[in-house]
Length: 307
Image (tube, rainbow, N blue to C red; front, side, top):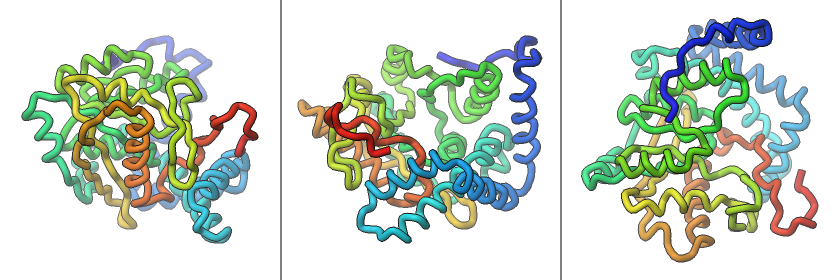
């Protein structure tokens, strides 16, 4: 369990000075009006599109694989918009970590489906909330925290100073955090009736994965880790959708619990998980993290890389 970390004098060492500069810049910019930050984020995204060709290529491959019904021009437009949203996400991180509650409330468009969380709580059960890697994920957690604080299951940052700021920022909307290797910790949180976030939509390799459809890719490596946590006797598995509208308002919807989950078929179960992820992503596909190599693990080790 990770709680509010203390400041350490070692963070003032020269090796962290560049990190301090970056954090100070992000903190300062976070106090600008939201529309100004979004404008700057779009400019940053345009630079990413032009200069970070490797990341752009990954997004192009993913969009082409997942949306073959779009023509080449439409796919290019989506990738350009996606990288603009990637730039905006940098500024959203600052908003989520440092904005006061009154300012966060102004960004709330709607939160629906909270009754599903309440139903689980009334049964004395924890909630495994499946969430896709939307680019506004930091703000999603902060906004949902206005109504219901949860437990973040996350990968600790390699930079101790960034870990300090990231943890303190995320604890503004979470009770505590749990490192991704602390499986027992997450199972205990579910047993204790907590709301726990879990992101099952990345490629974690061949081990503990099933190859099932994800959009138009018929065989996508999908983690079965979801089933390990969902099998807790004191747990219901729900999912979350979210998107940011043109006015900068965030809209969240908690979907009902998956019934008879998990079942006796891991392949069927993770297929259902991917369907929930698709349902969420389709609301605003340009706001999803397409720069991740989602299809790096092929069904056969001899299959050529998509990337």
